[in-house]
Image (cartoon, one colour):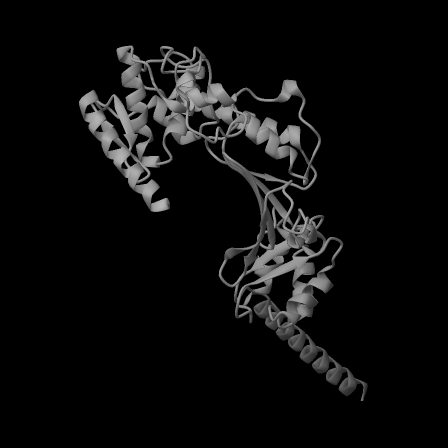
Length: 393
């Protein structure tokens, strides 16, 4: 009898082992198999969350069919303790293995809310954008100018106050080409997600802030951010200067930066930068004055704000060192923060015979080799201006 019992027990044990092995094999297949999610979702993982809570949230949103397998798989791969807080984009049909990797990998959140602070030439704009997981595109939730009161005296829209302080909210500062250092620094003072102040000795010289997009965290130090901007511009200067061609009509990286800033202010058409650069460099070679309005404007405003009107004859005839209608050669320094493309245009201009250019009414410019051709282009532009003025009346 004991032999029969032992035999039956052994058989049962073998059956259980087979069943267990089958369950494990099935669980492994489910863990790596395509998931049931039909449309991408944005999964929020709060600070202090657990893998159990995450698995239940995923199940509620239809991303996993078996929360327990999700947790066992995370434990088996030693990832349970690596859960990160944030908002993460979970693509459609993601396997449980892929989702575990997404929520434990670390790094910046891949979806959710983004606060973008755009610093432009004339103003700064705060935007709150939320990612639509279904389309993978950001949808604007709010937009406002810091420091300017709304119609009812409310300076900050609700979507912005709601996302402030949330760990998964990402912040980005975007500096446009052609801004001045004054504009950037004054705008950063209005960014309430930054902390600290900028000492006068830490303020970069004109032109030494790199136009770019900068990821920051809430509470980041303003001085540290400005230092990053200055370091990137210095890196660009060093790199571009090392790539310069022979025979350029300037001798130092500082002069390159000055010319690049003029190119930046003279055209917003990327394809024109090297042509504009050729005009100024042809003029420098021939000893002609640059005669460019943006330098005169900088001399009037000192880079602080927008002139908001046309230049006066007295300003065009002044002895300001930035008045390139009077002084010869380059002005004493940059007039804005040029982007990388303008720096590259300064050291690699097109080869052209052009000495003049004027707006052509399409957003670009008409270029000319002779003064007679230029005067014809100017006449056409004046006619376009007159038509535009009549249309606006």
